[in-house]
Length: 106
Image 1 (cartoon, helix red, strand yellow):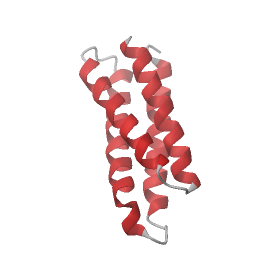
Image 2: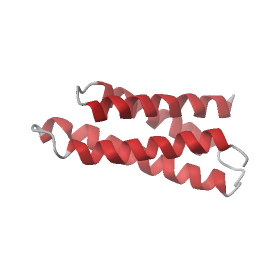
Image 3: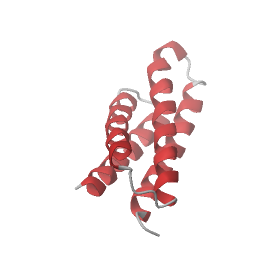
């Protein structure tokens, strides 16, 4: 499949973001996690949508991948602020996805 590496990174990132957002809801100080939850949700949505377009072999995706790159970096930065393991795992998945987006755009 064309763009298989990026599609895999996008789907992995979306899965980690969805899991992280849900796990944040179980944290003791949920108010402290609001930005993390919102950023996770947005990142998951854009990653999922971008993966679907790439899987459908749609060619006009450069701007979508650029936006995905930006939000993955933002999500990685936000999740890295927190000590929870699900946030650390999410930050790592987002970082890898941002790198895959960079490679695609190069």
